[in-house]
Length: 81
Image 1 (cartoon, rainbow, N blue to C red):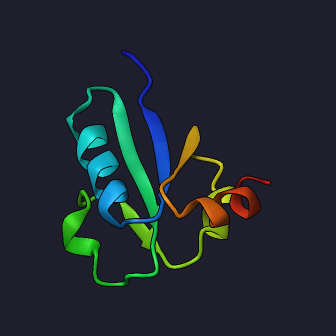
Image 2: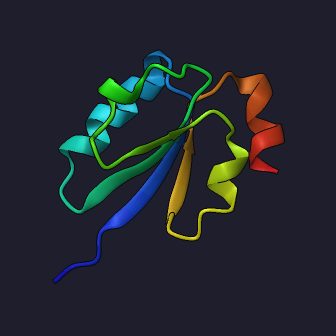
């Protein structure tokens, strides 16, 4: 059995939603956690996806294989560092 890749997503605006849909359509890839300042997105993500308001929670999540940033460019450097 192939191992699933678990991804986190920071930002759930227009591009975040595009990435979430694409990830959902890929076999073997799981959107595990979304960090968003919009607390009402729970119905827009897969049932097994957790939602947090603080992107720092994704950094400490040992179950993630990678994090995708879909935030404005000026915020990307601070998060990536």
